[in-house]
Image (cartoon, rainbow, N blue to C red; front, side):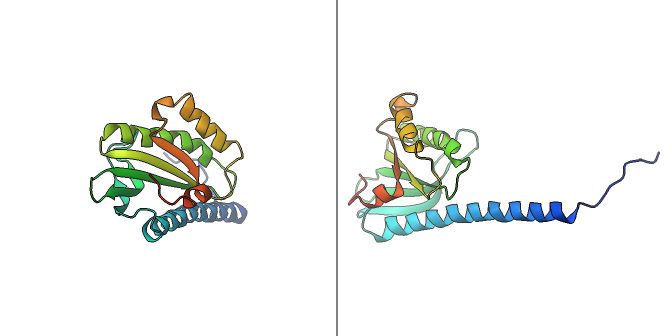
Length: 168
């Protein structure tokens, strides 16, 4: 039996639109990865983590949904083995990354609670695209809805993070 379905070629304009969407998506991924690399350089080369060893893109155990939680930056104290988790998130323009912040706080908080060697987790926000209310919202979450992670996870803008002499 023959199908009457006609398959037509996509219009050039729709192909161009798809290409633009792919390029924009790749830019966002690249921007996030570049921010991770900048944070890596900062953590290693600025003396902020003296006495700690550094590991990047490390599996720290089971995530909430996926089988593994890949962390951007892990710092391990050379003398005690205590760990500090650092997750870096970049938002160059307005977008949906803000909605992922709550999920990241929960993942980091659960990781800290599940491993006695983990002292604290930092969620570092970089880029110009975060809304003005996000930081207050995140702090409010840590004092209200997600109070169980207060003191375990700190959400901080990159500019304030890099002003610190030490992170613990």
